[in-house]
Amino acid sequence: MTLHLIHSGLLAMLFFAGLAALLSAPLYPKVRNSLTRLPCQIRSKILTLWLLSPAFMGFLLAFSGLLPSWMDSHEIATEHCSSHSNGIAHLCWFDPIVHLSDAFWMGGISILASVMLFNAYKGINLLVKHWHFQTTLRLIGQPDRQRGVFRIASDHFFVFSSGLFTPYAFISSRLMEQLSAKQLDVVLAHEQAHCQRRDVLRRLFLSLAALFHFPATRQHLLADLELAHEQICDVAAVQKVGDRFFVAETIVDIARKLNTPLPEQDIGVIAFNGSHIDIRIQQLLEQPKPVNRYAVFFSSLLCIVFFSGVLALAMPLHHLL
Image (cartoon, rainbow, N blue to C red):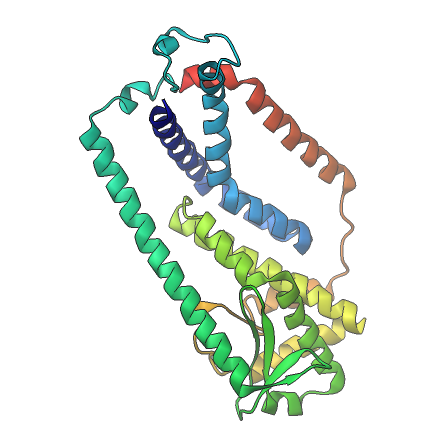
């Protein structure tokens, strides 16, 4: 019974995750421009949910469809359909597929296990590489406890944050000497906001969780999420110095100086001169728009109604599947 439950649940989850990704591909380009006009904090939450939506929807709908079968198998509920007379947990539509030959399942599981092992190897290799990279940076850098940054002796201009679980900000001695005290406050407030939020770890997790999306949609979502994170940290810098125009000027000034490409960006480095400088400057120069509380309330209410409806339709969903 447990094996049939796993088979049915896995098929249903893949089916719904693929369906959510299929719907997301044409829908996201239509709403993308509207999302960019939202405050960065709200946009970041929406993009996070959108990236997680295929995996989350797949799990939620598969769980809801299997719920009547599971309850019947554990004698919590009465028999719910004639197909359940054998006492095996199932989903009606997927049940014939579940009963295919063992060779079919062994082949499919072998492929899935190979893909998972390959990605696990890449992930472990990435973590080890990142750990060595950050360890090297901390060894060659001089910690500035007062400012909360590591200073690296170099004639190049660079400033970035790096680290998954214990991120730190790093800045070159040359750039530190070129900045005024107020500019340095802007730069460090921005990078320390990345560290406090653990944006490197957040992006790594979401990039893995969003693998069900089509590549183009996933790429656009991650790029827009990166922009939202940069804008959130720009706001943190504004709160530090209290001058939006000065923060905008500092971003432009430092973006011109930071013309040296950073090494090892694929293993978790967030540079101050991040993506979409023009959009970030535009946000800083415009007055922040108040959040529509009614829109937030009704959006939350819609999500609650949706999840409640999915659970209420567990029985029809079970027969549909």
